[in-house]
Image 1 (cartoon, rainbow, N blue to C red):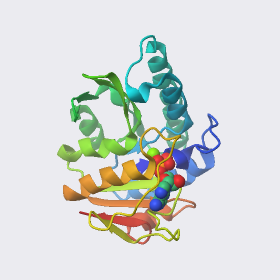
Image 2 (image 1 turned 60 degrees about the vertical axis):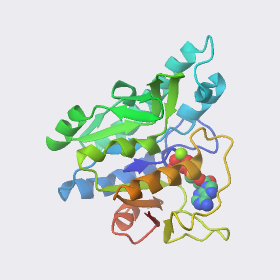
Image 3 (image 1 turned 90 degrees about the horizontal axis):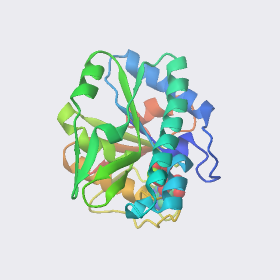
Image 4 (image 1 turned 120 degrees about the horizontal axis):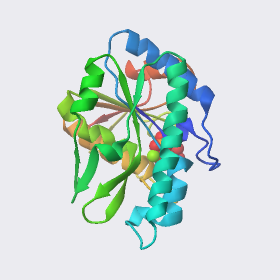
Length: 244
Ligand SMILES: Nc1ncnc2c1ncn2[C@@H]1O[C@H](COP(=O)(O)OP(=O)(O)O)[C@@H](O)[C@H]1O
Ligand SMILES: [Mg+2]
C-alpha cells in the first residue's frame, strides 16, 4: 500500500506538516485489514519534506559539487516525516516497523536492487514495515531519488500480489475529470506534467503501475477522503484498476 505524499501532507501549500487526521482515518482502515490477517507493506510519499530540499539542491539531477549536505538534509527531513506518520499509526495500534530505503535499496544503472530478507522476517512475525520515498545510492550519479511509487517494483520476490496507490484524487481522471474505472497499456490517458513534483506525479505512478500489472500484480490507484475508502478500494469498488 502506498500512501501518497499529497494525501498525508499539504503538498500543494508546501508546508512541512502532516495531515494527522487523514493518517488516522487511513490507519483505522489499515487496522481492519491487518486484523483480518492480511500481510501489509506500507510506503508513504514525500510531499514537501522531500521535494523541497531535492529541488533546492538539484538532487533530482544527481549530486552537484558541494551538495552533500543537501543529501543529508533531505534524508533527515524524510525521517522526520516517517517518524510523524509512524507515531500516529503506532498510537492507534498498528505495529509498524519504520524502514529507511537507503539502507536496503540502491541503483545499479537502470536497475533498482534491494535486500528484503529482513523486512520479510518482520512481516512473517506479524509486523508492518513502513517505508518511504528517499534518496538512494546510485552507481552513476552518486545519489538519486527513489520515489515511494517505485518501491513495489522491488517487492515481487516477497510474494507481493496486490498494490494499492492511495492519493488525493479519486483515481486516474479523463479530460472531463471523471474517474476511469480501468486503464490499460492500450488506452493510457494523456497526462500533464507537474513542475513541483520531482518523481513524475500521476504519470510516474501510472508508469510503475503498468509495469506491475504486466508482472501479474493486481494494481489500483484510488483516492482517500474518509474512513472506509481504503476498504472500498481494496474491494475494487472505487478508483482505477490498472491492466497490462
Ligand atoms: N489524469 C490525471 N488523473 C489524476 N491525477 C492527475 C492526472 N493528471 C495529473 N494528475 C495529478 O497527479 C496528482 C497525483 O500524483 P502525485 O501528486 O504524485 O500524488 P502522490 O502524492 O499521491 O504521489 C494528482 O493530485 C493530480 O494533480
Ligand atoms: Mg507522487
